[in-house]
Length: 184
Image 1 (cartoon, one colour):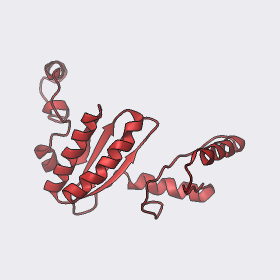
Image 2: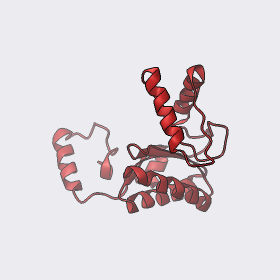
Image 3: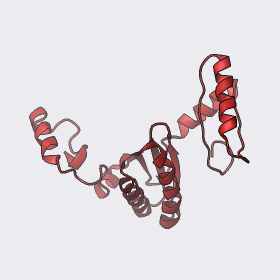
């Protein structure tokens, strides 16, 4: 919604010498499907947009027991997961803001709403990410929410190795106790 329009939005920053940036802009225009609206922001507008973007993510609305999930997938599967987030929002009755990078396959969901509904939506998003061969972990949530929703997902089969390493490094359990995979 940073663009003021309710639409799928692709955002890219081109930084280089002026001739290179102009070339990248022209290349992008030539790739765009017919009917696509393209805006190039320069100068102060460019800076204002990216400042607003960075201030928005991650952000859980005040008064909500929201959750921020970080996900990682094969880069083009990001679009599938973003589409799945719309379905999860409708099914769960929550608001989901999605941000994903096609170049690297990493992004996040900001899920806002009632606690139980947020957990249902987060579970649906995680299940979809895993079905696509990726992951979805909780990046931000209230402590009471993390107690009811495993931040890391399924415990991996190699959990015993992680526990052994943690025990050797931190036998007194003082370093981020119960904040890593499997609650170690």
